[in-house]
Image (tube, rainbow, N blue to C red; front, side, top):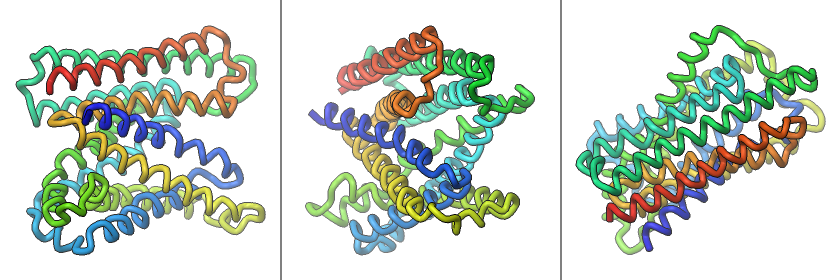
Length: 345
């Protein structure tokens, strides 16, 4: 039963992660940095700390009972994830949405799931359940790759017909290096949670029967996301000043954008909490199994939003076919993850 709950929570997490970015389509009069810094303040600082303080009245007392090395590690992993999100945006700019997204999500899927598996339970790799999970990793990469090919076909068609020009290509080597760094650093989101479990254990002991998986994990997210806020704040701040886009905050007709930014942050932090609940219910390999489900679901939902918002309106039929094929592979990977985790229990 815990496996089903864990998979369901990871799917809910991926749904949130694949959806919050769609809100930015409603803030067209703002630049990316305008909405992103507002989102970062809400999602990475205000909401997680409010929830953590509400969940754990003696929040800093809990932190004092945990080794400072653990706290520092979580903060630094969070900061690494924040840096990865900056590289992620640059990677999309340099290699394009399809190729860049494919490279980065493939690296994130493998790095974020394989490292916890090797650290926590390396002996499980050569078991039947472990091999099924490894297979799920490969299927996930395959699904991401096929979806990437679909996007490449779409973008080439769009450019050829001069319907839309939204991608600037630069040096492939430089772009690939940025995407590689983005994939490695972005996976630290999962590592922050994985290595933050001592905090959850101390919180659980403190709260006792009043504790829930959401409350017990909240001190991990508040610390990790604070670390992630730092790189995002400085990068967005730099863009706001350099381009003068900070002036757009007073632009007429944009007052509702502030509410969209808050809503966007709420979706994101909900996804983080669902992920923690999912990983916590999936046993020793929760951060491996849950991460793969999270990644696969996020890509599926993001592509669905792309269809709904018209991103595939001018795409040729072969591109749509490849997207369906990639989506089916990602759905298969979720099934394999569930099977592998069941065999390991």
